Length: 400
Length: 226
Image (cartoon, rainbow over all chains, first blue to last red; front, side, top):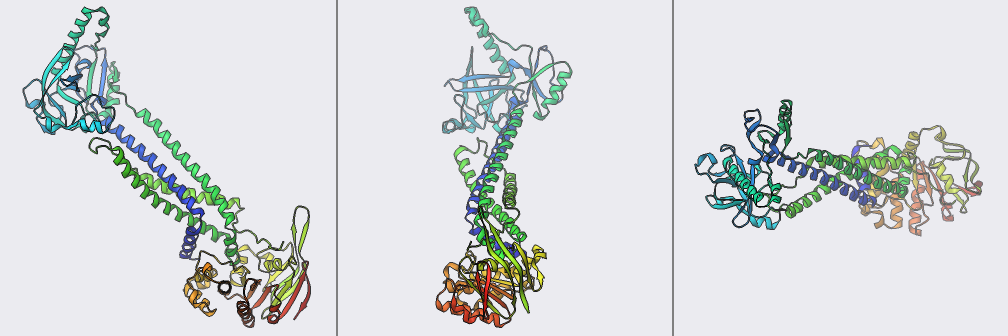
């Protein structure tokens, strides 16, 4: 029989069997679940990767128990060296808003607007994010966060009084940096000269000593990580390599921030288990329904038998029907997923500039189509085999 | 010339507590160019016989020959080909595919006939329906047709591949007198064309169209009338 007639019979069968409504719904649901599991994984992976690659804290190695005179800044992949106590400080403004000040060499940053550290001689200057959050630590990126997120350009050449223990100085914002390039997801980190951080650290130490003198119980507050060198690396992908080199030289080395790649590996397993679960559930339900459908299709099969159709032809028609089923369900799934994707991004991406967009894994559509094809094929194959390889039953003698 | 020959065929149905004899040692020759009407009460084995003749069912024992060839020695592919090319079935309940239009139903047997591979099957199907008086019903679905019209579609489907043998199980059972007459005349025309027409029926009116009337009782041929 020509292929066009197989297609004709398969289309007729597909669009007129009520069971195919259930089959289509099942495949749509399974496709959407697979697409969103893989898209969520892709989005999560992208957030982690961006954070790992861009956040300065993820490219820091701490070298413990070393002499303060040790200079590792000339080492390959090292951007600059400082001490642990002299890297960053948490400060408040006069309005009780909080900031993190990070001390860097004058030529460390690229600025998008305004001036860089090496372009001015003033001491108390800082470079802040292009989108600048002034407030308490944001717990979530909601409307309140958005209300407090300011355009950094509004703050160029503006001054703030920054306060810490025993420290209060006027700082001027002279330039703006791209937050996604240096401190991914951190909108209240400003960069200043390393000497400023040392000043704040010394002031805090004096304060703690004074507290200790006043009350012995406060002496526990005096902590120092003296003897710990902090290395900011150039390439975060070579952090393990640099760490190994230092360890070979006998140093005790730890990363400042934990790398969450192990969680990602665990997440991959979760994703795989979920997808396998979806496939098994969909196949089982489809198999049960298709097996029942074959029994209800006896009359049509009887007609085909009387007209000379053999099992092979009818099996091929069924398989072609399963291909049509996969195509139809995939097309509907793509449309539904696009609608859900737009809705989710509208709901969760408060501001596209600050929030990580929700990615759609396009590969998942292809994977879902292949999976739906296999599921529908196999469910029909096993349903046919359950009927002893024949979907044509013998005539029942009506008179008996 | 013998179209169908049955030799000592028996058919038993084995139920839990009993064995039912549907066909009991029947031997007969059905010839081309003749109309045979098989009559008998319910349970006499008429439909079972027609199903066996049409290879839709297998006898428990005995032999069936179609054009001199033993059906039991044929492969399933050969049997399917016989059903497609040599035998046309007409059922009491029409057994049309309700999801297909009239002409699509008629096309069904032609789709697997190699003779029609390069021909326009749809045209052929529509011609058959016009010949049978359904010019205005080509695109109607079975549910949109009367009983008589559905049976005409069934007849057109049965003769789509020009089979030499027509097997009809109560073809006029659900029809009014006018349609019954039309169907019987059509079957008679087929007989006159040289086909072997075998009809199972309770309807005594059909006798006047038949060449041979066979009465069945308890799975046996009781008598053969003309």
